[in-house]
Length: 343
Image (cartoon, rainbow, N blue to C red):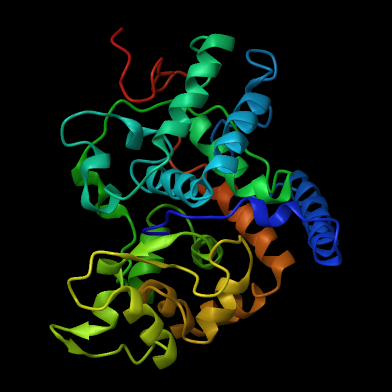
């Protein structure tokens, strides 16, 4: 889930035509499946989180997060990928504790993998409104999880998955801890190990890689697949025609631009990413790696079905949202998401 930035919100509004109706039908089917699945207890353990955690202490939390997030996504279609990546990069470093938001010396956000992460201003806007409605109640970690869900769900105008809440905020943020983030250059074994280190499995790796259906990658994440020094040297796992497309945006090994993570429907959250991975059109080496393992490749094939993708992605997002969370009396509820409470 590296280097993501852009996404589209308006495409799914529809104009009353058949295509819009068909996609609305898909969304309804998926949502029905997810509600029933959530009640079946999909995850291995309960770390102290709950659905509707703020029902009594801050009943407006869901509506505030959704309204702020949807308004900002409507104005900036890049935000779904940014907020999704922000949540992912938080959870993969010391767990889902909002440590990525802290503005301190040598913090996580100053580390190389996080320099292109964005969406902080959305979290600030949500926190400001929630502090006015329910002072000192809603954690920044929960805001991250809810905003990521709502940003991705904007195109459907309905929530794609349920979010458990009750996380508390961490007080430590160190750039040196970001070595736990999966690398865009990683092979299959390295990727799987990164996920297993966070308590996630092969299914989660394949499902969450689907986040690359939206957003962009920096040329520096792609050019090693295209060039050997100043000479063209295309990765054999990369389709030659698609390689030329990438080179048009990244014409040299030192290019500083960006490319779409999904070379087909980069502005739409859909299952097309998996079809392109099977066609050797995954943008990153880590995308291509999914097709190099038999079990993973079979999952990739399965998730070309949009209903299966939405269901699998939703389940794995809920599971990722439980990684090393702080609950109960651990951590704190920050008054401002960018700094630890002074007392």
